[in-house]
Length: 60
Image (tube, rainbow, N blue to C red; front, top):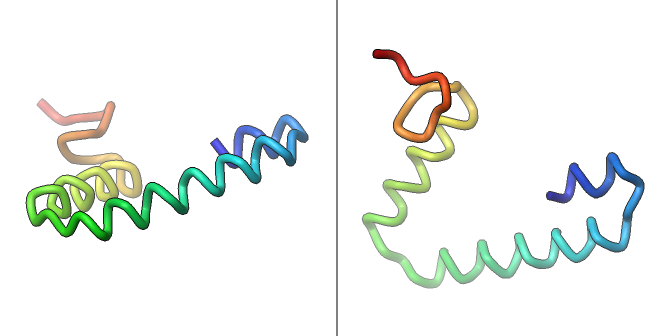
């Protein structure tokens, strides 16, 4: 969302989105749920290389 807001030249909304991202990251880290960590890694892999359970370009 930060990128979206900045592209639309809405710095106030971008800063708000940055705060939300930061708070959410801290909450997830504090949860320390191993299954959640695996899902986050899978999501990261899908978004960075375009493959995996969360990819819109899944292979058949």
